Structure formats: C-alpha cells, structure tokens
Length: 520
Image (cartoon, rainbow, N blue to C red; front, side, top):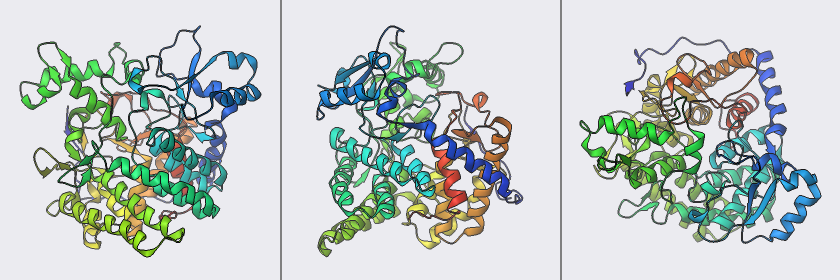
C-alpha cells in the first residue's frame, strides 16, 4: 500500500510560464461569484441544516441545536421572521443540554451570523477552512463577512470551549487546527475596531488554554498534541464515507489492519483479533486525526492510527503563533509591558522546545516528535514549511528546507507528502492551504523565486482544470495535474468536492495580494 514519492527529486521541474492575466481574471470572477453561494445565514437555515453525510428519513425534520446559553425563543422568533412557513416546518429547533455524547439524532449547531461553508458535501462551517476563507474574503474587500466568521469562531469558544471542527453536533467534542489568533488580528487590521478586539481577547486566551490543558497538553515535553474527545465511530463516517461495495471507512480500515497484523504486531492496539473489530483506541485516533484536519494520512501511522502518540510540528507552530498573537493583541490594547512580555516569553520557550524536538539536522526538514519512541518520525510532509510560514525557523533552517523543495515540487505544484498511502492527505495529492503556507513561508525568508514558481504552478493547474470543468476543487493530483482523484484514494471518501472555500481563498490571495504573506 505505501509507496514512495516521485523519482529524480534533486532535479526541479522546468519553469512554467506565468499564468496569463485573462486566465487569472476568469478564476477571480468565478471565485467572486461563488462566495454568495457558499454563504449561510439565518435565512438559509433550511439549506444549512441539511447534511448529506447523515441518513435522515424523508418525513423527519432536520434538527437545529441551539446553545443552552442562548434564548431558544429568540432564535425561533428570528427564524419565523426570515423563513417561509413550509421551510420552518422542516426544521426541529432543540436546545443543547447534557453531554454531547448523549445526542442520538445529530444536527446543525446554530450560529447567530453569516459564515461560509467549503462546498459540496461540506455544508457547515469548519475551523481551519474558515481561517483561509476569511483571508480570501479580506483580499477581495469583503471585510464584513470575514469579521462575521471571526466573531462566530469566538462565539464557539464562548459557548463550547473551543473552535469546533464543524458546527454539527457530531463535532462538539473535537476542535480543528487553531488559527484563531491570526484570524482575529487579520480582521482587526482591516476594521480597526478596538472594542471588538478587546472583546475577542478573552476568547483567544481561552482557546489557547484549551490546547495547553490535558489531554492536549503533554506534561514533561511541554508541547501540545491533537486529542479528540468522545468514543466510538464518528457518526458522519458511517454514512458519508461508503465505497461502491458498501463498506464504510471503518470496515476498510479493519480489513487492512487484519491483513497486516502478522508483520506489524504493534497494530494490535487498534484491532481486536478475538472480536474481529476495531478497538476503542482506533476510534479515538480516527476522531483525533479528523480534529487535526489531515483526514486521512499515513503520517502518524495507518490512516492516522497513532496520532495521539505525536507532538505535531503543525499544531505546536499554531499554538506558538497564538502566543505571539495574544502578545500583539495585548500590545494593541495598551496592556502593561510585563503582561505582553509574559506571552512573548511563552512563545520563546515553546520555540526552544520545538527547535529541539522537530528540527532534523541530517534531513534538513522539520518532523513530528513521537512520544513512545522519543524520536522524530522521518516522514517528509508539507508541514515542514509551517515554521517558515510562522517565522520561528532560523535562516539556516529555512534555507535547508527550501533546498529540499524538490522532494515536494512537481510541474503541477506541491505534493502533500512523499508517501503514496491511499490517503488523500498524502502523495500524490495537493491541497490549497498547504501550498499557500509553503509559498508564504518561502517568501517570508526571501526565497521569492521558489515561492513564485510554486504559486504559478498551482494556479496553472487550477486554471487548466477550471477550463475543463468550470469548477474549483477541494484537492488536486500534483503528479497529473488533474482533479480526478477517486482512483488513488483507498481510505476516507473518494470524491472531490467543488466550491471550494480554501481553494477560492488561495486564488484570491495569490492573485490579488501576490505570492508574499500579505496578511502578516
């Protein structure tokens, strides 16, 4: 199953001509027309509550759950004023009470404002998707919508203790990569609303505390890990990731583990031979890899099995960035120097720990740290560019990473990893957020030729497939340049969704703001 990436890694592909302006204009026009279609609000409640990832009898109403901290009567009155009677009759408004794991009929989690969904089967607001979407909106001058997205993420922290993976009840016990500090500061730079910034600060700090508390916090190592809550299968997977043979993801994973246990006895923690079923540890790691945003990859083990055994470079880079952002927010609010310095000191100390654990001098790459082995796992992955994006890499480390660009670069853009595993977050696939962060990271350290080249390859690939299909997609094959990805995906869902939020955002940022990191 696992196969290595492209050959001749030391030979960069020939330079691609810059994408003509008329093709850029066509992409920009398409993106501008897509934002309204992907925007959800109270008046779109009937469209928003529907979820293709769940099975619902035709006669049953779609559940819409309201936070216990909200006044459900006010929400009902708001919906009555905006929805047609027939649409209102198809929505069942409920108040969230008790533990999330006790919910048996899953539905949408109500958000009091406008937000943008990724598109396709993803008809809800997602955590890290929304950061990139908001950056694209800001580049287009749609500041009000970007501010609403940030406000709703702050709302989630206030009501649920974290930024949710998505605003569905089956995601109430898992978060997503934490970009909240970046998002808040990006919006503030455009609005200058100091009162809004002051109201945001306690929620950003609360979100930081979420990632620095058990079970996410790793005592002794003083770094963080992904660790979703809840037990058993993720509800959306049972119906939403079924193949042509009728097997859901868990059945396919169980079949793989059963076949490979003889040569991999360590996998027994995830598969019980006696019952011929996945273990609770497998389900917990599956939930956790979905929290990480990298669903699915072999980076932490088969389909992410083992992810709780890792301190990932990506997550800790974002927690470091949040510490820097909190210091900056406090500085903008006129806080005392010692208060600002406390957060700066936290960031410096985290950077020291990250340098010690994540940097591999021999490979010239940043790798994740495995807790059980107390070693870095040598798995070249595009998150090696994240320390450059954030700015905690040294100049020498950045130069070494860029020297290894050939591991990931193709004539069509940037591979996610060098390993073909059958998972969509591995080779040969290419994802907009990873391309964008690599481009911005290289540009930040002065590698403008390389960053511009990757940006142009990526946009050229998007443009070619857009001319062929009229769509922008969730992901692309970085080897073939195609959006036809189903045959290469063995785990997860084999579809390629259209829309698509963060791909649209990358187009906005790379064509309107340039290849550089215009938002930092």
